[in-house]
Length: 319
Image (cartoon, rainbow, N blue to C red; front, side, top):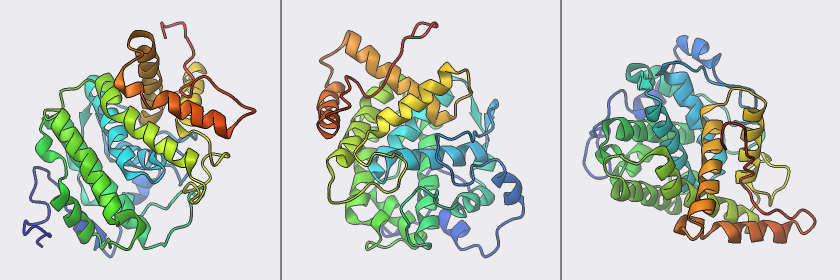
């Protein structure tokens, strides 16, 4: 099978079955029932469901991270790769290895493509759901390979983005695969490729360089949007801040001594990064969009003014 650019689909520095192979499978392997037991049944990433933690990252934890970062990005596809990148860099810093055979298995791709949208998500055509999750698991694998091989050649370029979308049956008239969405993904991958070609940034550096800008932009989009509601009811306030909601919940879990999911740990890390920048480099370019975001939030909530959205609280271990 050849893609739009004449290159065979999957002819990239990645391994494992292509997304088209998993998508075209008629029968889901019974082994997926065991894998599904490890996954949340469609609940929000801030709920109690945690992927198993261990010394090696397997398919269940990879799928959960893909699902969680999909939720926190709230339909802004440019916001998801930076969160995946941050979490994978945190794995790498902890010395965790990935079980590539399991992560890149046909069963793993089938598992995520048989996921359902969470009940809080806006209803979408049933045929779109497996395409969306299949695409994002493909991007997760690419970002993981990029970080562990320290080679930006693993990151998708526009021809490969189009090839994958074509392979899963995605169309330009579907909301997740419009020209705007494809360009947004192309741009963030190109930015990562250009600014960190050997994946040498630390997790903190990646949070500063990629996560903050994407998250501030995404949050601001929904705060100001009166014409199009958020893609779900994850937040009780349609004009609230996902950054505030996610960091508050994650910090509360940490303070209570509860184990964090990978995304929750990343939210705590981002909160610490914002605080560190404010204290040491208050004029840092990464913060340029932050105060305007707080101002927008306060304009929407005149009776609930805040001075920050990342809700950092000093803790006994030096936070």
